[in-house]
Image (tube, rainbow, N blue to C red; front, side, top):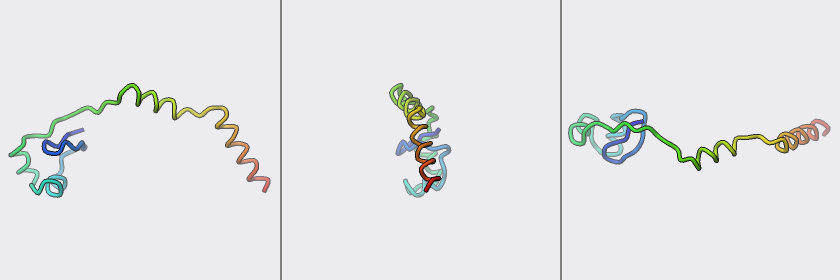
Length: 76
């Protein structure tokens, strides 16, 4: 990911569209004035990683409830 040298927005690539719409400069003007965008590697905190891991696990109860709901809809 690249970080805009003016506003700090993260993006896959600094585009002329971003430069013109956000900063009223062409990409070339922005690069000449502020330099190249900084390359950053996005990281997640351990808390966020644990939350993702815990929230994406389907428990046996989740499965049983979904199966019961499906069976009740088929009967009706």
